[in-house]
Image (tube, rainbow, N blue to C red; front, side, top):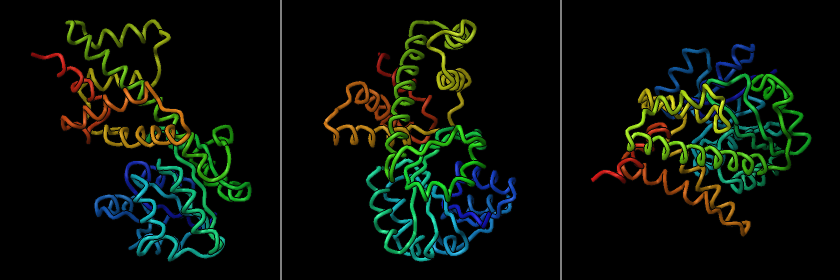
Length: 295
């Protein structure tokens, strides 16, 4: 496989780079954060000065950025991927963004002969190598990126070509709204347990011991973080969950299908952000809920 490019070498992009390097794939990368770039370079990534430089060295570029505006900047902004990519290249957006942004970027790139796919990651950073992907792309583009996706997924059973560009992010937004709902419910119940004088640890331990129907990996992780007070090294921040859930709400509204539970989920997490918890792991939202009941 030719050199793979990565724009965005943070938590997800950095793990992705290491996995590709372990598989014997050369990686060229860019990140505006000097710390992220330094960590990637120490891991063996050829760090470049701009996204355009990454595109010039790579046949396939993977994009890991925070949001929709960042996606546009990385692709068509000054020094962006479009400036350095050649006809025949492929850009794969693995970020969770507004599906419409991916459609617009695909339309901008097509006249230049540059293919585009949206393949947001379904899985935690530590799960690289067994990530699942819902891919929005043409059949031909999906075939061209399959090899790199297999390294990150470990199995064809975790690769889903679900439609044209934009469809991958549609599915991811639905998935992350489910995560938001699980978190909102879990943090409210954990807050209520504490308010009533019940042990939060026991609440989780009983569910695990019973293999209860409420049990899920997300619930176990949320409960474990709350019991241990681990919020400063987030798997997923409150702010990121708000961003994804609001994108899902907007998408639902565009389809004439406003979400009732989704709106409540959004409220819980915006309340947590308003109390200063935005940069912390989403499990911390229980503290914001608990404050509502204190005199």
